[in-house]
Length: 388
Image (tube, rainbow, N blue to C red; front, side, top):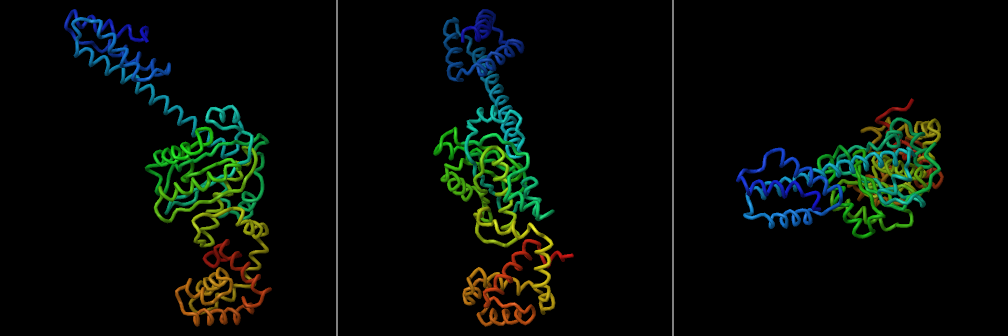
């Protein structure tokens, strides 16, 4: 420390001898010394104590000069730390982008820097605040632009997403824009990271900002991490938040796949009007199956449900009734409570549906056909978007 603060001692001696305060050049030297101390890993306490100890050897001690030099030392130290933090955050964002997009450039080497050990399976949780649109890369837009692409994102491995091995870290990625997190993304991410680190250790958690949503990538063996992440999301977000959980996949490519599954789970939940705040991709695998043959599902929706377009008041009340009946396992009283109507109204609507379509949910085979058609209609946003 003495070699760093030699200029500080010289400035104090000159000030004691001449009575002149330190000039700009002397203070710049002190700032440079403070920055160098930060780069070498010295604590700010050790830096200030060394500066004060040197001042004790100067008689009389020039207090105004001492105040200015110590202030300059601390300013240089703080500037160096802020610069290092900015560089670290930039490196973190770049690493997270590469990890979630499947770019494998020095991924294993960089992962070690953030405490990741690429050797396990991953489960990715994606949290979206209330009122934010789902924008997580091509996986999310795939459902809207092409249902077949979304199906592949949820069920299959990502093409070219690397044969490298997986990580043991939990990664929470806070959104970079949109919705509730736009203004406080870094603070929210940091608070959640601190809480997860306190429970699981620094080598099991990484937090960064990404794509308008908060994402948590946890090792498959650390199943409790997703529950803990969801708990903190519930505390941080206003009502209306939603979490999508991808399935466990191996390697960096598995991170990409599971991330897209989580994002698509949120998208599917929105399209289907699901009420649950936490959606698991494993529970939604039937929908990619439905969407894999778009022509077939369009034909089913058109053949079974298009007669409802002739209903007075439009098809929406009848579709909502079918959804409520299916969600209530055929219990019409429970369905009526869901809809806020009388049981008699539900019975009337079901009879109306039977007359228009020829299908009744009371028949096991017809019930399956009707339910599949209703799910397909929600996935295709019918009748708001007419089918070709």
